[in-house]
Image (spheres, rainbow, N blue to C red):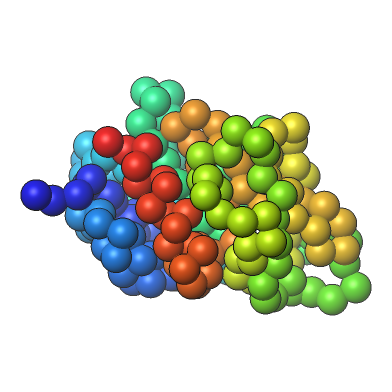
Length: 202
């Protein structure tokens, strides 16, 4: 018996294979592809992302990915954004004074963190809401692996982390989940979180 069918959207960004391996480890039937039909039909769609906001948005546009991501969320089909794959879900990214429209499925702007040391790179604790699904069963002092200089402000109900200032470390909005940290690089804690997400697909 195969697990839930998960597509990792390949639009030219990084961390595809590590995400694929981590999801396979928790029982997903994973495909890395730019095939939008496969992305639309899968039980879950993962939107990865590393590097610059504008470059990731250009990559998504090049493969026509915006429509499938927005369409899945509108239809209530699960989507998981990771790192810059979370950031592009917001209205706007502001990097080095360049303001790039995002996918607009989350309200807000992604801006440079006001912190003495950037990038924020390493392990950090997070504060999830009481009704969290992603972090269910994880102790309060669990640490996740972050690599970023930009983030969105947390809205009520978001998971919060702090580096110089509080920011949105994860969001859970019905079919839409996203993490600013890399669960696929976060050891057993990240695997636990991905297993929690996979359970929402069945």
